[in-house]
Length: 409
Ligand SMILES: N[C@@H]1[C@@H](O)[C@H](O)[C@@H](COP(=O)(O)O)O[C@@H]1O
View 1: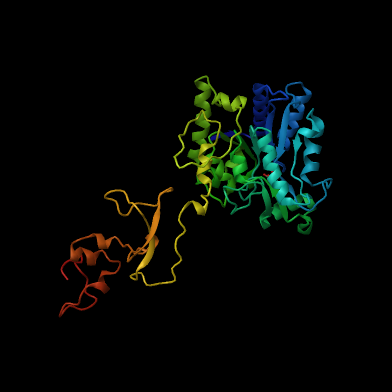
View 2: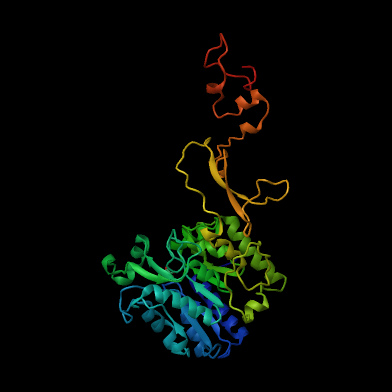
């Protein structure tokens, strides 16, 4: 993951706008091979949209062959409501550039069948060839689009109920009246974003500092859904100095050093050509048994396939025996013809199984305290969680007497 820090919001927004223009121009989109751009709303991208419009007007970029997909939309407010994301996008961006209205895609929060709307949206993304670059902002709680804390990292476009913190944060757009803020929205999923060929996140201001710290310095976490961009092979976060307030000095210094070293060496970190030009195939998550071969040349975010939950039907369903007695005989599956010398072979697809009775409990009920693996009886006692209670009483020795390594008793 690249991490670009600029002195202030203007410089960070300019960096992102220049980057997008550069990507579109290098891609050289045509009607048959358009550049597909994912877009956010919120106050954060306003500076980017302003600069993109300026660059369009200056003749530096054309949106003639750009197709867009917005991240999200409120449910239940009219499309022409001043705070709908439809209104936002046309007001701040689309009305000012040469994009074809038919190339603009924004979820319809008033669709008669919201679930169908979400399914169709994913299909449209696929039909467009997948998203080349997904621009994103970040919620104060680290949400990506409207993927609130606790969202599945394998999620796709769907209906979401907004978290109270988001309603509170967005109430500033609704006259600070919490009642006027929609409580639900349609949003692309985390997985939808991860399947873009490239992700660019913009984070501005001190109010994003905690979320940025969680997403950059801590692990991938469903409670800070933007952290999932760490799994993407071509993701970049661009922020201003204020947004770095909660980061460690060494983190900030390291990422600044990376940029300086690259500049001193006379190169920029560039994207593999397949990502820059867009491959013929649409990136999708493929679930295979093999561990994916990681390669920076693959336009597909291979790591995200690790996030896919495996359908429960792919494995034998554990018998729900009502018997709490672990020593009682239990039923389990065993291959009809087990491999030679391996009677306890694991379940393998395509193998014929028979039900057998045994006294072994299913694996997750094995009360293995490791101590049972140690042969020496004195060590065995010492290895139990509470040796004082479990040692045999010795005549003349008080119960509370300490043991010397648990061996002398
Ligand atoms: N659904 C949007 C997000 O996509 C956006 O990132 C967030 C941040 O908004 P702002 O940029 O105003 O802080 O707002 C909303 O919740």
